[in-house]
Length: 123
Image 1 (tube, rainbow, N blue to C red):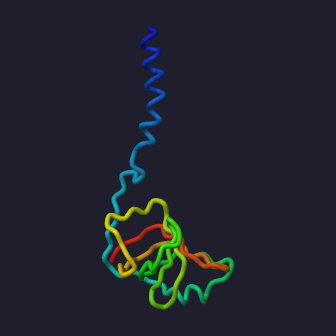
Image 2: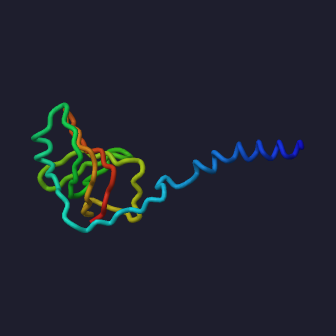
């Protein structure tokens, strides 16, 4: 009886840990879409921004330089903007300032406009 109670308590204590150790992807596969995508220009985003501007955007260009662990200066040739990469973004290959990327994220206007990047695709 005593062993049964101890075994039950041990299982109940370990079960939440095992459940939380699962993959965050929740069994969903990544979608690989190769069709057309509407891409925004950085200069147009900055020009049309105000303190309350927030919108989902897709931009293509290069990460020019790293300013912090998760922040970069991005340029598409028309202008430069600060981008902050989500903690979930993992790259399988190294990139540099010549690597063309497509960024999916949320543009936030204001004094220091930036894009909070949720997904990055190396082109």
